[in-house]
Image (cartoon, rainbow, N blue to C red; front, top):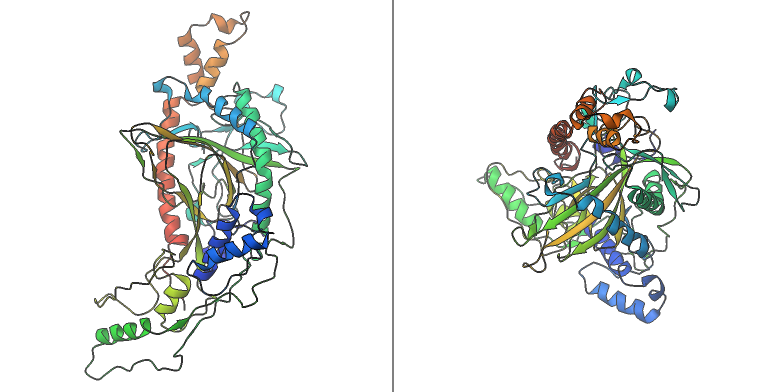
Length: 544
């Protein structure tokens, strides 16, 4: 059995019961408190706690929430504004300039991003291409390797690898790097190169290794929550609700009344009933929801990580970033279990958030028969917007309307986290996420947001990595030949001959070839996201 749940297995295998709106509101209140400066000391002050409680009660939520869980976090999502020391952040900002300050023709603007997303390092360029990418021969010392012994990588067999068939690519995979993390998490070391980051960028390599070490502490929390899957969703509110007029019988159909009119009348009756919503117990809750029966750590292990370095640039001509789409990272080929994101720099932009939603199961919900009111008021699942607002229902009486629950997607938005400069986030890949829109604060000046993502693969199911696969970038080999010692015969070769030589090495790709594969990969993964929505995150909600 796999320790870590994945977003491309059967939805019933890891979708959990929907959280009540009251539970989500309590999590939002808790998050609001923990976003306050030095909350971990202030919460011990009774006067401040009383003030926070008053602020919480000013928000519509049934019951009187007792503030006893502020030391825990959003469900399986962790953040820190102090994880990365300022000096490391400054080093990162300086080191990436080597990738940013290149001639315009060399800037890698992401396809179909309207010239707003600049990829400094991205795994979709020079990926593993099944049947084309070559790996080192097994059991052969590096100094004894011969290119004629390199072996093509075959596509994964979905029959023996966990995951639904639709979740696998038969063409491509992202290429991770192996990192060794010390027992105490004080440092990490890349075992081989980082795909699309030339090893000559030694300072940036050193910085990324330091970031991996720092993020190991957040990854430990996420992975511990995943192996304690049910424990990490310790609910504080009883899900049961009831109607004040519980014994009132549903209207009966009149002889002259059509089925359509009768359904509409029952809907109206149902929506007008007074409901008693689930609430916080009168004496609060006393369980420590941060406790887990077992833990998992990446410290002291060799883990596989995919690195992304991405900038979003806005200009007075293009002042608005429209936001992203709901997605998880990668496909079953990579088995990404957690993402770590560090927003290290921003300038002249409005606040942006990273939003999260999860697939939900309806099997365990306590729902009265044909009760749309309870469904909406308690869980917010008639539509996928989970805001506690006055319910405005547009009753439908067209021929396609049927009383019941079907028609809405079975997912819940579980939260949104602001992403100011300096913030670190780590979250499980069982949640879909998306970037919310943002724009220039001052429309007369340019602005940007810069981030680095560390995508952690399943430790229990390692994939081919840069340890197994030699660099595929033909340009890297051309540069290496040009920088050969002056005594080397390579220095006597004309540039045209050097370039032609790399074209005949079977393990190398030209930049044009790599970009062609990237477009194919992008199209495939866009289609995968749509399929995953249909299979997991946007299933028709229809409890039985």
